[in-house]
Amino acid sequence: MTNLEFKARLQNAERIHAVLKQHQIPLAATLRQTDTYFHAPTGRLKLREIDGEAAQLIFYQRPDRAEIKRSDYLIAPVASASALREALGAAYGIRSVVKKNRELYWLPRKFGAHAGRAAPDLIRLHLDDVEARGHFLEIEVILQEGESPQLAEAEAEFWLREFDVAPEDLIAESYADL
Image (cartoon, rainbow, N blue to C red):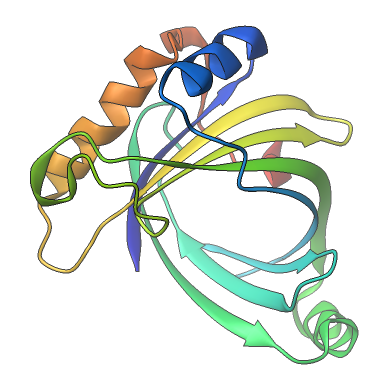
């Protein structure tokens, strides 16, 4: 799977919530997540545990650039998070543990074939309160099969402008790197 995404330090939560209200976008979920990152020879490998949900093993490759960027990823459901954490920790070593509270919103598409349709599998907005790291805004535009990356990038750029995110607030790193 592929998405185009950006992450930024959250400087003005009131602005974000005002834009969400203006577009009539409700809060979809509040999630408590723990991501355990493992040393990996390429990309990033993390075990995501979400309170009340099944855990996932996520591998992704993404350049570290403070801009809209492509992320290629694989997600595998996990039956036993504790056993997998122990096995991967023994094999690769634990790099970092990131705990966060996440507000999840589904944003409607504005351009192309999906325009005007609120489709939960298309654009994810995360407002993250990351323990010991701060507050962040993250947008993920999920590419559909055959979709132009330029169209997905236009979607991300629209929301970047709509939320008035300053270029200096964009960050390159993952939470594990901060």
